[in-house]
Structures are given as C-alpha cells and as structure tokens.
Image (tube, rainbow over all chains, first blue to last red; front, side):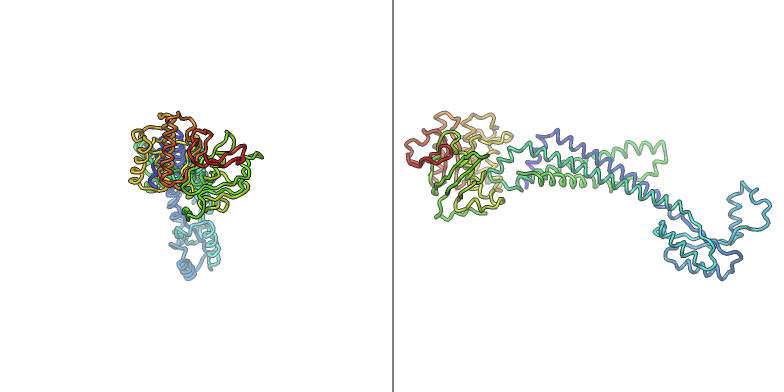
Length: 289
Length: 230
C-alpha cells in the first residue's frame, strides 16, 4: 500500500502538466458548485422567515353572536397546524384600516356604517405554511359555523413554493452535472495516465503483479488529484469571501446580511477525494489489461 | 496460490502443443519435457517459434491445441487470477529487456520483490546481494539508459533471479553482447542452475551450447526438429 502511494506521487510529479490541468478543472467545477450552494443557502435562509409573517383571515357572518365566535376560536385553537388565533371585531378592523389609510381618509367620507365584517386572524406554524396544507386548512375552516369566507395570500404561497423548488432544482442539476463532469475529468486523466504507462504495466504483469498492485496507484492518484482540486476550490471560495464579500460589505452594508456557511465548504477536499476516486475506479474498471 | 511442485512432475511439460497467429502456425504439435534443476537450450533460426514457446511457459499466450503443465499446473485449467502468483515462480530475461527507464537499477531489480510484497529491509539486502553477484553493485543508482547493453542485460538477469524463482527463462540473453560479456552472462546462468534452478535459454547462437553437454531442443518453422545433447 505504501508503495502504491510512492508510485502515485512519482506519477503525479512525472505527469505534472496533465495533472495540474485536471486539478484546476476539478477546482473550477467545485468552485461553481460551491457558489451555487452559497446562493441557494442564502436564498433559503432569506425565505425561511417568510412563513412566520403569513396569516389567514376568516371573515365571519354579519351580526354573529359572541358564543359562536368563541366556539369558532376554540375549534381553530385545537387544530395542530395553528400557531395563534386573534379575533378582530369589525370596529377594531375599521380602526386599523383607518390607521393604515390615514393619508387617504377621503375613502371613508360619507360612510354611515361599518362595512367590514367581524374576522379571525389565524397564523399557522412554520411547517404548515405550504400550498397544499393551507388549501386544506382553508377548506376545513369554511366548515366552521359562522365562517363566511377565508382569505389568504395564495399567490405569495405559490411564489414561495416555486422559489424554493426552483432553487433546489437548479442547485441539484448544477451539482449533478458538474459532479459528473468532475468524475469524467478524473476518469479521462487516469485513463490517459494508464495508457502512458502501458509498457510499464505490461512489465509489472509479466513479473507477477496482481490487478490490485497495478490498480491501487491509479486509485490513489485519482484521490490525490480530486483532493487537490477540492483544496484549491476551498482556497478559491475563501478568496471570494475575503476579497469580494468582505470588501463589498464595507461599502454596501446589505452584503453584511449574507451568510457564509464555513462548515459546508470545509468538506470540499473530501468531496474532491470521493469524486476523484470514483472517476479513477470507473476508468480502471473499464480498462482491459 | 502456491507452486504445486511435488517432485514427481517434470518442471515443464508440453504435450502436442500448437499455437497459431492469424492462421499462421507459430508452433506445431510440440511435445517435450524439462526436468527439475535441468538447464536446456531451445535453438533455431529467427521466426522458428522460440519466443512463442517461452511466452506459452510464462502464460503470456495460451495454446490453441495441446496441454502445457508447469510444475504440475495445467495451464488450460488455470484461473486468470492465479496467473500472477504462478509467474512469481518464473524469472524472465526478456529479449527486449523490458527495463523501467524512469527507475534506477536498484528500483528495477527491487520491483520483482515489491510485487511479491517483500519488506523494505529484505528488498535492500537481496537487491544489493544480487547486484553484487552480477558485478553491478556500483551502478545501483544509475538509470538504465546510461548503462551499456551488457550492463542492462545483467540488470535484467538480476531482476529475474532476485526473488529466487524455480524456473528461469531467458530469451536471447546474449543477443547484443560481445563474446566476453556473453560468457560472463552464461557463467551466471550456470551458477544459478547449479543451485537447483531450472533454466531454459532460447538462443540462435550455437556457440552458447556447443560442447556444453546440455540438452538442446531445435525448432524450425514451428516444428520440433531435433532434441539432442551437445
């Protein structure tokens, strides 16, 4: 095993240009993956708190009795998806509306009676703020006696859903395609190195070398190329943080809100090792010798 | 996988072996045996089938017809995965040397032991001892391209014998050597054989076996035309 490392290191030095090119290609691929993950991570973090602001309004029948309101509130509070329930009498609703529209008070001119109905504001737990669960909850709420109408920001929910699913899909496609690309780079490099050492390998075989003796140095070499690519990409992402993000945040404070997931990037060399070994394993598995 | 020599079988036995390459017969219906500890010569003009015969012995080729057994192992019944382990009992002196030009003399010879999984201490001791035996101890750090033809040949011999194999196969071992160096190489083979190693030398140079008293197998156009003692 030790000798496999020696052979792999010797080959790395002997074929330094092809190996350097592979390392840089892998590093570029991993850097793009990292930046994509970085973007997804920040968008995810930014949208994570949005569900907390989401609320539903249940409009009640006109002149609804106090007992019926209490019963409706009781039913809603028992629902496991509900975070909070607030009864808003129509006078309070009008007062809130007037405060909101204080610059457009002419809207209320000539208004003899309060046109607003009594309502209940319901906030759902973060996990329950999804397109399907909210639709289901709205259906259940409509069945509560005294509830006339249920209103909620359906468009907001679908946009939030598209944003999350879209970003995750783009992230996954990028990771899968670039990951496959990196494996292919390692595969091609190891294959080229193998053919360049064909004569040497033939001699090893005639001297009694097993397949494991011949293959192991190539696996080690694939791992070393992948790991080096991972380390270079890690340095690249740190350079991006220190040179780009930190400098930008000095002049533009909005960049201070951007999160930098250090732990996520520290696995890059290991990801490189895994992809390198996978590429090398596929290459030597497909070779006839 | 272990060498299955129980002492009763001939070390090498060919029985009606035929080998074809693209409808051209390289060897035709060859039958002969080599006993354990014997040193024999295979001779014939270029293209007579000497190299093919050696390749069949070290499993680089398979016979199209007939059977070959090496120390009791029938090559036709061997699994592909067993071949490396059997090859470790055969030291080969290749006609084209097959030296590793990116490794120095020491590493070239050591490779035969590394492949067998020997430890560094053992490798060092045995390689230097073998290089000393062929008078190349002082060239251990030199790369093959900087050696003369005779020195390269001796490196190949060192690599073939360093692991103390049961059989040594040599293909034209004195091909490009001057008479004095060739004599030195032959002396080395005799010494190896004297220790009990079976040696089979393929050569077209009759001077190597003239009056040697050794058995000689003569090939011509793939046929075994004579088997005699000189």
